[in-house]
Length: 65
Image 1 (cartoon, rainbow, N blue to C red):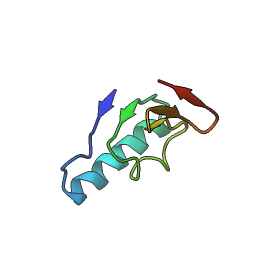
Image 2: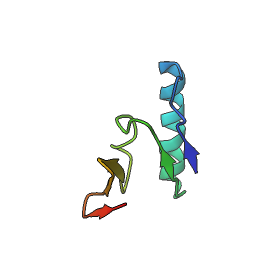
Image 3: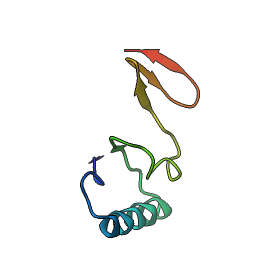
């Protein structure tokens, strides 16, 4: 579980962290990440969930929370 790994981090360090995450994914690791903005990680995600107006969304359904 990784929580807001990229928040407030310099762009160079963000790039290194994203490369490490991609390497772990390529090696078959399962990662659960929470990010304030998904812009940096959504292209790597196999599945993406997000909250919008109190509803939980993914690419297949919306759930009232």
